[in-house]
Length: 272
Image (cartoon, rainbow, N blue to C red; front, side, top):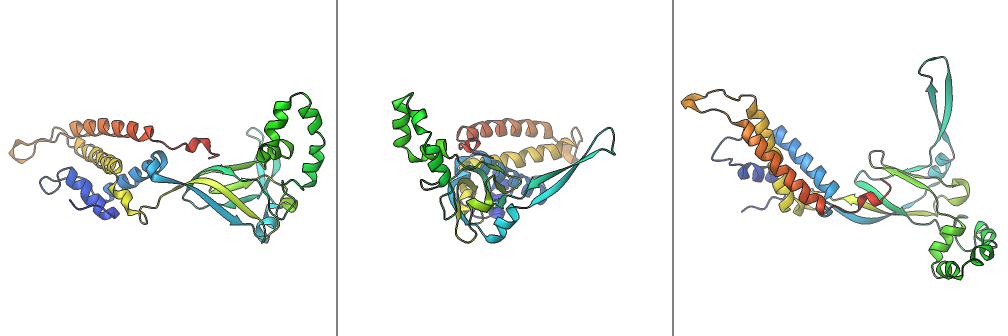
């Protein structure tokens, strides 16, 4: 059996699984490509073999620091009286992320050359004076924080709020960019989930779940196409039975999706 390593050979495999070479599969190439793209999208979203847990770092530039201090004006209009408007300022404090990133798990605390959160930070030292009041009620709390510097920094100084949505491809960092970043010196490090590129990691096309799922999606498309000629008699008295093919494919798709979702990575633990 030829192992599929490209989208083209993968499509051939799916057609052969449905009986191509013996019977005609009434699905166009464009329709098959769409179903394969749909299968890859589902696979990379819900199956752990379709993504990788990744650490990415980015060197902040002077231009990004300057842009983050600026705002974009958005105007709101009243739905009843269009003459009533209000202007809102939206910060440009974001860094574009690669389109392959589908979830950001965390952004590591800023500890570069800026005045970010570190033990010599002035804000850290000011809050440290309040530690007596916090620890006097419970020695356990004090010991927990002293044994975990990251937790201590989170309590005393606070991590920078961040926001991310996959379809924006923007990582928003709600920080004081003037003081927390130095362009050309400070790094942003994130932990994220990234989709695997099947053109690079071609072994994806040989995954048993992806092959079964894409084949069932094409089979459902085949049934949908044939259903438009339901009860139409062909030469020799043969009739189309698209509804049966469609319903069989639906059952297969449901079973495969349930199996894939059982191996779903903890993407929802991230920010987007």
